[in-house]
Amino acid sequence: MIKTFLVFGIFWSFILFCPNKVNAEVKSDVLGLRLGMNKEAAHKILQKIGKLEKTESKQQEVWVLNVDRSFSYIIIAFDREYTEVRFITAKAREKGKRVRYRDVLDLKKARQAGTNNNNNYIQEMPGRADKPGYKIIARGQDPIYLTYFSIERIYQ
Image (cartoon, rainbow, N blue to C red; front, side):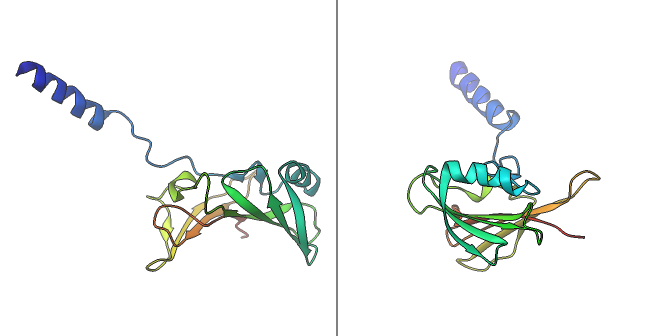
């Protein structure tokens, strides 16, 4: 009887007092691609993980990924001068290693802007003197797993 209470007490102490990582750190990159990264550095990463499918208006590119189990496409956009990364969107694979909303942002701090069967989480990260702010957007119809994951610069 005492042994049962002791085991039960240890179990509940572990549950209540040990940190439980429910939400991951907020992502600031997609497969190594970061906002503000220069075009050459971004292309170096992209050429290792995929193949350029098309260029739209010379500021946006679509890359098909061939090495990542989580994402199938990357859409990357550059600034007007076509010199640095302005936003990144990744399309999640429907099969393989699925990505949860909580893997990319803090669900407790994110704003839910979706409706039934249309989840749309947005979390803004404030800028600093040396780094502009950005927002993370995770979208999908599944309540747990996302379909699109984007990081974009906040212009002020």
